[in-house]
Image 1 (tube, rainbow, N blue to C red):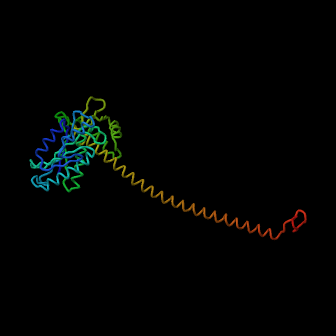
Image 2 (cartoon, one colour; image 1 turned 180 degrees about the horizontal axis):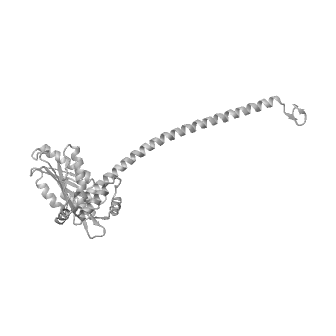
Length: 320
């Protein structure tokens, strides 16, 4: 399986120096790998963006069971996969890639320029969010290449000695009250966004706010509050938001299917109505045509049977 991480760096050249020195294979995305340092510097100078963060250092490592660090073909394959990962994650950034085989795990170092080549602006947000997104993209890419997807280790709920003693006395710890409220909320399948999640928790006497990389929960009427990571992995911002996003996507897909079926059914009914309308119109046109023809024939017959009356000569005389 492949694992990855990312962090900020104030020295792009320093990252390149380290990675290039030990590289057995190298390549780049939006950059000439042989001139990585100078091109990264040129972009910073062109856009005049000289903040403290010059680049992001990242690495994707592969299991020894899947790639042999000393095998050249495996090195090339690892570089190919890494390039697909980083070009997908950072399509408008400069990325220099270097394969290292100096450990048991074949791994690729990536130096990611902080500036977006289209906008000239730096990446904004926090590196933890970048890491979460990068992990998701890595999992999708390696799965396409037949490799194992990384399965994060699940951390059990964290309990203090005070909580343990309260449970021993048959009392419900305040953190368990928060956990129970969150569990109850998440059991309602229709909740698929943070707003509805928050409103339901408030009904259960728990408030929640988004603060940085995590959520902070508070028990109403008390001063008790705890961050999601203190309650356990199931209550962290990443876990909650991923589940809400998954539900929202599923609802959109179901809504799209229902709309398609409804539209098709409605389309059939519309076609029937249009056909009936055309038939009715044809019948009316035929009836009008028939009535008109009948009127003309009657007028002609009437004209032949009764001669016109002359003003001066009487019936049938020529007009002067």
